[in-house]
Image (cartoon, rainbow, N blue to C red; front, side, top):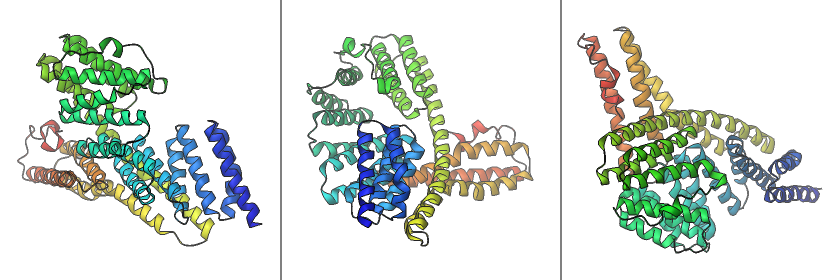
Length: 466
C-alpha cells in the first residue's frame, strides 16, 4: 500500500512538471490540486514539498505573487524534514525572487543567503552563480552599490558557461560602476559585453545604448545612436523598453544641447515607470539624468524640474514601501495559520519551531507599527491637552518621518555585516532619536506657550525634511 501511494505521488509530481514545462500552468495547478490531499494524508513530506514547490512556480508564472509565495513557504516548511538540499535551495531562491518583485529586498537577501549556503555546501556552481546574481539585484535595488558589485563580481569570477549570462553580469557591473561614478570602468565592462557576437538584437540595442550613455557622460561622441533608437520591442517587458528608450533619447538630447527635448523625454520616461509604480527604476533614471546634466552644465531650470520629479518619486517610493511592509505583515499571519493547520494534519503535534520563528519575524515587521503607537501616540495624546490645532501637524510629522525611518531600520536588520551597512543602521536610529526628541521639544514648547504659528508649519520642521 505504501509503495502504491509513493508511486501515485511520484507520478503526480512528474505529470505536473511536464505540464509546467509545456507552459500549461493552469493544468499543472489542477493536476497538483487533484492529488495533494492524498499526499498530505499519507504524510509523504518529500513529494508534498515538490508539489507545493510546483504550485509556487506555476502561480509565479501566472503573476500571482501572493499565491506563489504562500506555496513556496509551505514547500519550505515541509522540506525541513527531508534530505534534499537541491530542492531546499531552489525553494529559498524562489521565495527571494518573489520578495524582490514585491519590493521587500531585505527579505529577499535573507532567503538568498539561505539558498547560497545550501548551494555552497553541495558545490552546485549553477545555483551559486544564480544566487550571486540575485543578491546583486537585491542590493542594487536598495542602492547598496558596493554590495551589489561584490556579488555580481563573485558571479562573474565563477566563469558561467552561458555566454549571454556572462554578458548580462558585465552589463550589471557596468551599471553599478556608472552609478559609483567610475565611468572608465563602466566603459571597459560594456566593451567586454559587446564582444559577445551571439547577442539578440534587443540585448545588443540595450548594451550599445548603455555604452553611448557612458560615452556621453565622459563628453565623448556616442557611436550607436541610430542603432540604439530603432523601434525594436521586447514584448515581455514592453513598458520597460519604452521607458528605457525615452531615457536614452533624453541623454542624447543633453549631448546635443536640446534641453527642452531632453526634459520632455525624461519626464515621459518617469511617467511610464510611475504608471507601473516602478519607482525604483524611475529614481535610477532621474538620478543618472541629473548626473549627466550636471556634467554638461546645462540649463538650471531643467535641473530644477527634474530634481522636483525625483523628490516626488522618492516620497512615493517611501510611502509605497510602508504599505508593502504592512501588507507583508498580514500576508505572514495568513501563511502562518496555514502552516499551523498543515503541521497539525501532518504530525498532530504542537506548532513547530519554524512557525515560532516565522511569527517572530512577523513581529519584527510589526515593530514600526508597535513603536509608532506606543511612543508616538503617547506624545500625541500629551499634546491634545495643549492645542488641537497642532495635532494634525504632528500626525503628518510622524507619518512622513518616523514611520519611514523605522521601516528602513527593519529593512537593514536583514542585511550583511559588510561595507557600511552597520553605519547605516546607526545613522537611521540616531535620526529617529533626534526626530523623537524634536517632537518632544515641540510639545514642551507648546506646553510653555512658546510655540508660534510659524513653527507649527509642517514644512519647517526638521523631521519632515527628506
